Length: 292
Image (cartoon, rainbow, N blue to C red):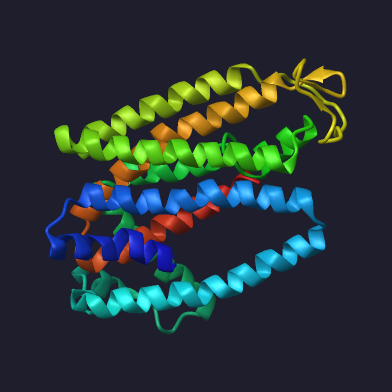
C-alpha cells in the first residue's frame, strides 16, 4: 500500500513542487525499486544454496523486521518535508458513490456495493482500456513467478541460477526505465509505451517458441553439465531460452508500465488518483491469483 501511494500519488506532488519532469521522476523511482530486485534475488539464492533453509528463513525474517522501521522513518521524513502531501482534494464522483451506498443492506452487500462504486470510478477514466490491459499481463504465465520457477526447477536449475536470472531481468527493467525517460522526452508517453509493448511481445514470442512439451519427473538441481548444457541426460536449453527471454522482455514491459502509469497520473483527478490506482492494483493481484 505504501509503495503504491509513494510511487503513484506522492511522486506527482513532489515532481510538481520541484518543477522536475514526471517521466524522469517515475523512471528514477522504478530504477531504485528494480535496483533492489537486482541484488535481492541473487543474494537470496546464494544464501539458500549456502546454508540450511531454517537459518536462511531466520535471516529473511530479521531483515524484514529491520526494514519496516527504516522504511517507516523514511516515509515520515518525506511526508514532513512536503506539506502539500497532507492536502487532498475530494472527488465529486467519490462523494456521489458514498451517498449512493445502501446503509440498510447487510454488511457483505455494502462492501460489494462500495467496491463496485470504486470500480465505476476506475471505469470512468479515459485511460481505462490501457490500464485494464496492463492488469491482464498479470495473468500471463510468462513471468518470474511460481509457474516459470517450477518449470525451471523441474529442468534442473538451482535456486542460485534462478536468482541470477531474476537479477538479469531486473537489470533489463532498469535499462527499460532509462530508455523510457529518454524516448518520452523526445516524443510522448503514448509512443514510448507502444514501443515498449512491441519489444515485450517480440521477446515473449521468441522465448516461448523454444519451450518443449514434456512430462518428466523433477531432476536434481545440482546435476547440470554445462559443457553440454544438459541435466539428467536431457537439454536445458529450452528452460534457459524461456527465462532469458522473460528477463530481456522486462525492458519493454517496464517501458509500457511507466507509460501507462504516467498517463494515469496526468489524466486522473487528484482526488481520485489513490482510488484509481488502488483498484488497478487489486485487479492486477486478482488476475495474478487467478493464474495460479
